[in-house]
Structure formats: structure tokens, C-alpha cells
Amino acid sequence: MKICIAQTNSEKGNIQRNIENHLEFIERAIKLKADLILFPELSITNYEPDLAKELATEIESNIFSPFQEISNTNKITIGIGMPTKSLEGINISMLIFQPNKEKTVYSKQMLHTDELPYFVCGKNQTFLTINGVKIAIGICYETLQREHFLNAKNQGTDIYIASVAKSKGGIEKAYRHFPQIANEFNTPILMSNCVGHCNNFMSVGQSAVWNKKGELIEQLDTNNQGLLIYDTQTEQTEKEQLNIEKGELPDLNQLFQIYLNGKNDLEKNGIYQWTNNYPTRSIIESDLKKDVLFVLKNDKEIIGAVNVSEEQEPEYETINWEFDNSKVLVIHRLVIDPKYQGKGYAKKLMDFAEKFAQENNYSSIRLDAYIQNKRVIDFYDKRKYFIRGNVNFPEREYPFYCMEKEL
Image 1 (cartoon, rainbow, N blue to C red):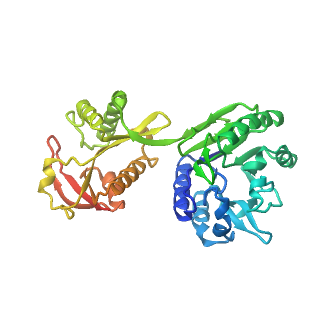
Image 2 (image 1 turned 30 degrees about the vertical axis):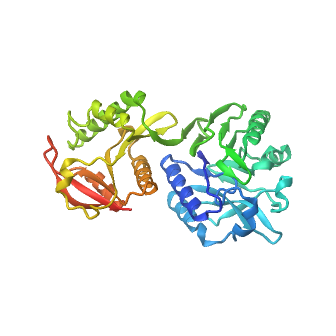
Image 3 (image 1 turned 90 degrees about the vertical axis):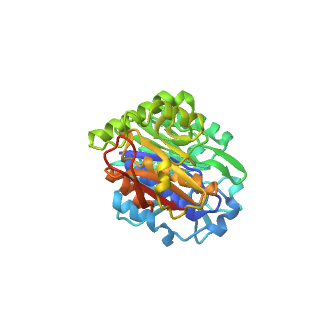
């Protein structure tokens, strides 16, 4: 079984946006073949005690329907953080969605004194059993209390997962406590922490996995969202911590090799959209020097890249663009290393490019796509890019569609 720990940055009180972010991470976890994904404490609202009463919902609220649907369709169990209403008051809860089952709720049983003015304690421990593995859940403060772990262990738990929202000081305590407990009780412990501003502190990530010997076998960084996968059978981990940043000249060799890999992969499929004269090493170097080439990295490894600029090919002048008098952003040379294709990374780069355009007050985006590359044309079509005409470039047998999207 594969357990996925999500490290997210939630917006204060923005439930809809946070749900959208969660669903994106769940899609990523599905591509990584996870059986279970758990999020940090109060991940849907962010950790905001002052807003808990206002934001708390009934557990049957239909705003959570997308989670049950994606659980049913993809056979994945999902745990999200949310303040919930009970007869006694407001609980800090994790809503758990299992394939084709009624959702269950685990509510934090042990509260920090700072939380007592806002929340009430939950009463029962919740366990998940997936593929024969019994999993106990704890939420933040209680996970550092030996009593909470012992109660779970006495009921036969195989793995303990902590869903937290912790500052630097809290993480330092966790990194002392969890290895000792894991080693003493021969039980793997996983921790999901958030990043960014929470209530009156900064949460510092470092979501982690300790094996049954208490050894730290993987962790995420302090600043970025990401996923951490633990395989209960092999006790191996993998992580996906994506970051998009401007490429730098030291990246040149690796980037050019990725473009060559992309060219070779296209040609294996009978698509000759790139030639020996495009894109060249000098073109990529120029992109880097102009600060217009953005790279997608998983940790430190480059996965792909895209040119985001205002530079338009001279051939574009022949096209009857619909938004010809607007401020236009142009996409060039989008590439994903073939060994990482099919995992949604091109979508990540295009999401970034479109967000960049919106934040910088562009009215539309233009790009071109080789007519023979049906998969890419379908990709852009689904993103609502419309064909405005076609152009020819040297050394290509077929033309390129010129496509445009209004923002």
C-alpha cells in the first residue's frame, strides 16, 4: 500500500480555493498510485481558530461531494482537515472519504490550552484499515502526547499518521519526539505539515516519514507544497515537491538535453516539429539570459520548461488574431522530459503561464502547435485555446496552428 502525505499552503478562510488545491493534489497522488492521501490540520480553512465558528460545517455538507466522487472513481482514501459542528461545540476534524463507503470523521481528542476557547475535544479514536494495514490518525498537539499514541498502539495500529500545523518550534519538538516513539514501539510514523502563514505563526513544512527504527527516511522542505509517498511493503519513499522558477545558465546543459530528448521522442512517433536548427543550444541559452525560460523542478531535478515572453514570430503577422490590440503573452518551447510525460506536468507549466499572464495584466495568450501533434492540439483545445489560422516554419513538412486564449 502507498500512503501519500500532502504538504499544502492553504489560503485563510478561502474554502473553495483550498478545495480546488486539494483536488489538484489528489489527482497528483492518483498518478503516483497512492491508496491513501492525508492533508494537514484544518487544511480546508487553514489553521484559523478565530474563524472556526464562522467556517465550521456539518459533516454532510455537499461542498465535500467532489472528494467522495474522486474517491469512488479512483479507489483512493482521502483525509482532509476541517472544523465541524457537534452538539458540544466546534471540533478540529479530519473528514475521511473511502471508496463507496459513508464518510467518517476523526475529531481531535486532546486540545492545546490555546485551542480551548474555540474548540471542544473529540471522543473516539478512528482507525483506517487498508489492504490489511491498520492506520491511526492524530491531529497536531495530541500527536506529541504519549498517551494518544499508546491508546492507538494498544488497539493494534500498524502505522501512525500525524496531521499537523506546526511552527519552527513545534517541528523541532516533533523531530525529537517521533523518532523515539517510532523506535520504541517499532511503528512507522508519518507527519503531514502545512507551509505558510497560519493564525499567528508561520508553518514550516518539513513533512516527514520515520521508519519503525525511528530513522528519518524522507522529508519535504520548509517552504514549498509537495507530496511524500511511503510504500508500506517495501518501506521505500518517493517525493514530489514541484517548484517553477526562472532558469539559470548553470541549467543550460541539462535543459538542452531535455529538449533533445523531447525532439527524439517526437520523431519516434513520426512527428518532426523540431529540427536540428530548432531549438538549438544557443536559443535556449538566449532564453536563459533574457530571463524568459521558466523551469519545472521536482526537488532539484528539472522536469520541463517553457518560454513565457512577449516575443512573437514574424509569421504571426499573417494571422487574424481576435485580440490583436490587447497586451499579449506568448508561449514558446514548452517541453517535458519524455520520462516524466503523462503525469500532468505540462498542465502545471501551463497553469503557471496563465497565472503569470493574469497577474501581469495580459489580456490574451498566443502559441503555435504542429498540426501533426494531435495530442498537443487536444491539450490546448481542452484549455480553451482557439485556432486562428496557420503558419509555416522552415524545414517542416506541415504547418503549425496558431492558437489564442482570452484571459
